[in-house]
Length: 343
Ligand SMILES: Cc1cc2nc3c(=O)[nH]c(=O)nc-3n(C[C@H](O)[C@H](O)[C@H](O)COP(=O)(O)OP(=O)(O)OC[C@H]3O[C@@H](n4cnc5c(N)ncnc54)[C@H](O)[C@@H]3O)c2cc1C
Image (cartoon, rainbow, N blue to C red; front, top):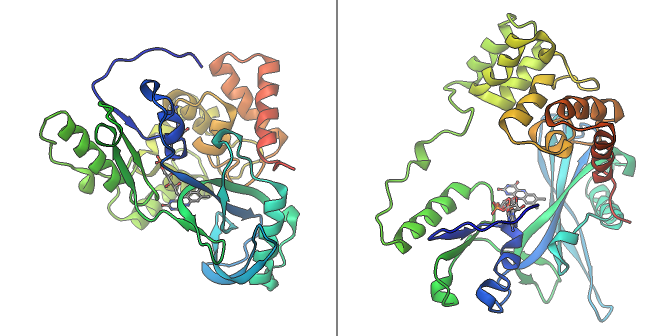
């Protein structure tokens, strides 16, 4: 949480939903708000509803205007099988609050669940089966005045503040999809070079594989890993490592060469091994239990993994990061809170 000064010729403001906050007060100027936010919510249901199929299903849409009038129509919902469970989305709402105060609410989950069960009555999903929820922001252009529906921003935006605000040395980029991130990154870097009066080098993003993506035929790669029993890991664990770390799974197995205990499963998980936690801390800069539970491993991405798992991971991390008992407990308590929506 410390702040310090860094001098640079060019800053790229890439703070997603926070870009306006970052710009506010820049060089003592009052900046206009450039982006309007909407919230987006997907639910994780602890049951395989769709088998191997994903489906788009028409569900009810209901909006009440400020004057009390109502609008009823249909909207498309997706149901997708995910890690033996089902992920369902997306509920879009306008968001006018502070970015840092956003929390998914119980009321939104319950309203959305009603719409989901109306769309697919056979699924008959109970609230307690919703084990996690993914809520966040998407930029919108506004709401449809006739229907109240959120109208999402469809294309990335790039702002050159020397043109727009007479402030040199900073540009802002806001993307709208992961899937187009490489294209947006390329255009951002091109603009940085242009502004610095230099020629941009040839971009290699189209041919650069993602981390772990040095695989030509995935099925062959998977079969090879599953059949190699050399490290004593079972099929489920090898499959899981192959999917999550791809061609770099050796980075994880390497810990087992140092000490076999790192290949043991985390209690409460059928797949995740202790080495993944250590790798998260040593190689992926995880500093909080929530980093490892929610983002560096799959342990908590579909719901609270339970006390035993949280404590074990907090112990492994605690030994690496010098946490005492009370800090470990605090980390566990903070993670449990994440799974509880606001009232
Ligand atoms: C529920 C949901 C489902 C989605 N599903 C899909 C999908 O299926 N496919 C798809 O392509 N896209 C999807 N998206 C959209 C996708 O998540 C975004 O387009 C993407 O994350 C935008 O990336 P970004 O890097 O621009 O912003 P972000 O991912 O928001 O990253 C911005 C980062 O800046 C950091 N930051 C903010 N302020 C500061 C500061 N002052 N200092 C340092 N760091 C700061 C933030 O912490 C954050 O990590 C979904 C979004 C939501 C909310």
